[in-house]
Image 1: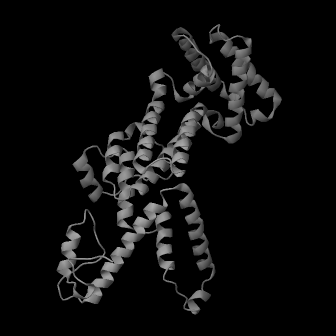
Image 2 (image 1 turned 120 degrees about the horizontal axis):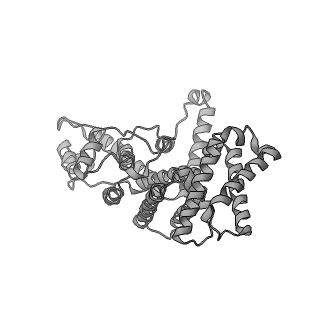
Image 3 (image 1 turned 120 degrees about the vertical axis):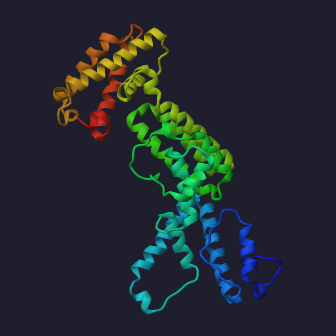
Length: 356
């Protein structure tokens, strides 16, 4: 039980409550005391409402800490809410009630963002705004979060521009976050979405997704503390930013970079050879785009003849530009690697091949 000003509940006055609350950091409440004429019963009821809501936020913050716990709890919540919905309207006729059901419904709303909980929303909003690169100054950031709604949400299909992410602000945020697990969970979801988009643009980036999985698995197994886990995620995000900008660094388009990465995989090259492979990637991509209508016809991957035609053009292009260190065995393996990837993109309908 909360002890306020060393007074029992029956002796509490609104000024006691206000004095106590003034010592809490950055909290807004759902009740307002206008005078000391409020009855002790009213005060107890209002404080209990706050305590319950605060406890539910804290419970939610704990539940989302570990993926296994979160998934199990969501299964339970979904089962309960589905059973409740399926029992209507008969359940109203029986006047059924359960004091544990309402808190569970509240938690269900927090999971699915259907509850307008200011504190949880603000925790998410802070993380969203940092990840969207919309805030750069610390005090301006605080004021902005208080006044403005989030312009973008992490969840969704919007294109992610990692260059806009303020990594240092992310590091500062976890130190002051009230609901650390909630913000860490949102950062994790953001990275997962960024990785999905990056992998769709370049299939050779699997090492990043594998590392992401190892970080999460280690944390879920209890091998990492919250702040260490967060720092590992931030470091991964820093590397993803560099990777996301590598096409510009290499002087290639995203599509050319993927071809280049496939061609150099497993090869140790000199700088001169790397330049030749870059030229090979550029020329191959240009050739396929310029001749899209004849090479990438509808359902080309389903028919042996158009597949053979495409493979022949790939071989001609690579043969013109690849360095001599690519002997026949390596050359053939690279042609097969590219063809398999092109077919995969066409079958699954993604990337520049899938858009053909």
